[in-house]
Image (cartoon, rainbow, N blue to C red):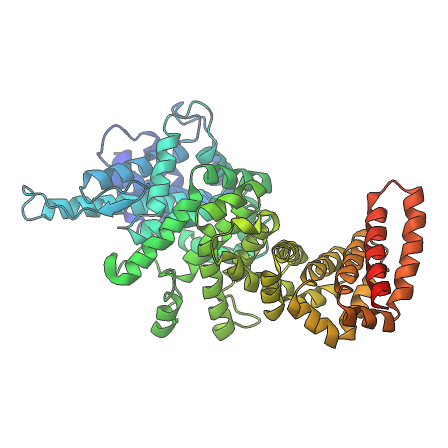
Length: 563
């Protein structure tokens, strides 16, 4: 009788008012008994179980006591060495994927996705039975993913979801099912929920750049009304340490998450061309509010979806995933190989359009712009520019320059500087393009930073930009730029000295610029640097002194020839 009553409450908890009453009465934790007792070998009561998982997962997301009880593995029947709630959620994700296959509405497309085969069942009374199977499969997908969305907010649940012990028997099937749901071509809600899960799995308690608490406001509201600031802070802390988030990102990369995200974006474009499920929202909980702001005008919605077909929350999660993936150098080449670079540029341009037209100092619109730009900067730092697909390198310039002025953290400015310095090392055609598109002026802005590392990357990038027609044209007209090189050539920082003296050596190849260097007292400055570098090189094993000396000698030689 108790099990039947819990089943009824689980189903009724889909209603917000009833669920709130259940949570206040402390009944939600009893759903764990229903989950533990479920027979996974049977399809009976699978939908009831999914509702119980959702109710329990929401309680776990907002209650530390519920987390402590539900995420212990002692009641997990010894299966997979994980807690019962995590084990049940993984099994239901797998069963939901199987239900989709059995419904006859999709088959594998050879890339891990699913496509509608349009088949009809001759014995199902005009397709009614087939449609019922499809609806049941969709409901299971949405409910199982909704539970997974809330579980993925919690660090211990992440560990159990991705890194169970060797006893786990269904891990590969779970990951495959999750990835397929993320790129589903027949269920937009599953797509949305799947990518939210991926983002949460890669998010740590230290991810504050985008205000973690506000990012999860929608999910918390769905979980429980009126969360106080203390509970919000607890939820942020419960996300887990950075090491776990990094491990999760690298694990998912090995499982093909980059290609999955690219396919997911393609599926939305497929929808926007009129081929998807019209009218279905990008929301797991169809009855509990929209992911889009209700006050947003229809024109804004149309423009927001014009390029990708995705709403802002979806793009936000996808951009965050790419930023976390690019954090590890080993993943950056895969981003280039698996078409992640093109998608990042598209998402950045969409965000830039939104921020430029509708943003403001207090606006959150298009704030994924920085995540896209940071991911692109990280790729640019370590990737050989010759390996970029045609046109991709040029599309990275605008995001990197934007970071110079608008990054929320100095680290991102530094990363953008390193990335642009690498791109500027390519050839004169690329350097001309960079100078014409504002790279030189942006680097000068970096020189005004109080952070010496940012100053250094600014002068290093300018040194790489020097040898091109557009830079020479600028230097002939701007004595201030030459003075900057002379100033940094006298810096106490050896790397700044190396970059600035190298820039002076290269610009002095042009007779007119060499004469201007002399007129500005550059010859005397270079001779002083030469004397100091010679003394330092004789007494220090640091090869940087020899490097400075070599660059200064080249500059003086060009100046002497011009004289």
